[in-house]
Structure formats: C-alpha cells, structure tokens
Image 1 (cartoon, rainbow, N blue to C red):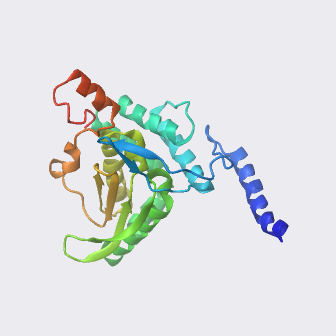
Image 2 (cartoon, one colour):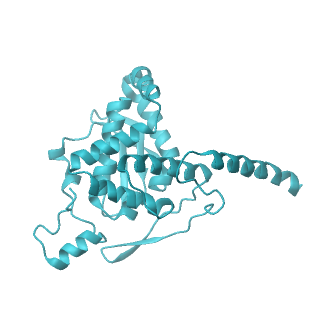
Amino acid sequence: MMMMMMKPYNNTIHLLGHLNSSLPFPHKFNYVKHYYCVRSQSIKNGNEVDKPEYNPGIFDHLLLTLFRNKMVEEVGWDSDKPGYDGLIEVANQLMVKTPNNAETVEASVRILRSLFPPFLLELFKMLVAPLGRGKVAAIMVARVTALSCQWLMGSCKVNSIVLPDGSTWKTGVLVEKCKYLEESKCVGICINTCKLPTQAFINDYMGVPLVMEPDFSDYSCQFKFGVHPPINEEDKTLSEPCLAICPTATRRRELRTANELQCPKL
C-alpha cells in the first residue's frame, strides 16, 4: 500500500525534474529544498509581530522564478542571493536604476505585462471585462489573485467589499501580512513597484478598476477590485512616513536630516 501511494509522488518529482532541467531561466526553482517555510518574526516600532504561515508549493517556486527573471530582464542586473531574498535585492535595484518614481512605475507595469501573452489580456479586456457591469471580471481576478499570488504576498483570502454605490461584491482580497512589504522594509518599494503599477496594469490592460490599500502599521493590504483608485493627490498612502525598520530611515534619523519621517523614495 505504501509503495502504491508513493508512486504518483515519485512520478511527479521525476516530471518536475525534467521540467526544471529544460527551463530557459538563469534561476531554476528548487523543488526539493523548499517544501516548508517556518514562522518568522519582524520588528515594527520595537514590537515583535508574528507573520501568518504560508507553506509554498512547487508551483509557487516556479512563479517566483518566472517573476524574478522578468524583473532581472527589465533591470539588467541580478542578485547573487537565491530565492525571495534575491528578488527583494532586484526590486531595490529597480528603484535605484530608474531616475524617478514615474519611470519605476512604468518599468514595473512592463514586468507585469511580460508575464502574460498579449492576446490573453486583450481578449479578457474585450470579452470578459464588460460582463455584468464589470462584476464578473472583478470576481474572477480577485479569485485568481488570491490563489496565485501568495508566494509573493503571503497568506490572503477573498472577502466582500462595499462599492461607492453602496452595493456589496465579493471582489476584495485581504492580504493578512504582506511578505513583499515586510521583507523590503520600504514604503517606496511597496508604492512604486507594487501598489501603483498593479493598479495601473489591472485597470489599463484587463479593464478592471482596482484600488490597493496597504496598512503600514500591520503590513496588511486590502485589494478592492471594481473600485477606482483616488487621484494621487488624494491618496494618503503616498505620503506615508518610512517604516521604523527601514534601514534608510534609520540612517536618516541618525544624521537628523530634514523631513526625516517622509519616505525618501516617495
């Protein structure tokens, strides 16, 4: 009986080993060493906070590898660090490379576009986005986001949101504690390589309005598909201070520079 149960597992490992050897990426995912992740802790304002556990699977690591390689192509530089740590270093390099925040956002949108076949985005926007006043597309994108992006953001779930007209749609995604923000330790990276480009990409190339509301006090983030974002001048997240754990903020406090609370990358 045990041998019969192990046979599908062994066949899966053999298939993934073949796939791994044929991937044209400079970084290939390791399907043996990364079955489990452990509970980690971060420090914010001097307090230790638990990060919800998420156990990444084989395809999570494949998605991480794909996303990282697309980012490397855009930046023209790669980190020596493996896995998620290397991804964060490449994201930092993207911020350094681009001369201003607008170009950082544009580069991040290009990265997101490169993950999809062009015809797929065009067909979705043309055929699916108009259905049910946009509700069908918003529901679909919310569920796909919750299922496919936990490798990047950590544990998340679909939830109900209230639209500006007072109706309630189950088109939200609540990220319990964003791994990307926690690991980057930077409000600027969150805003310019995640929030703003993701809003622009989902709206412009999929036809689904989206506002993302990160909470920098607990690292959670609320996605609201079907809701238009405010203009930049009215978006309070764009004037958030640096995180207490941000190394740049620490240096600025030590040097007592002007406007030391405002994130220098915003």
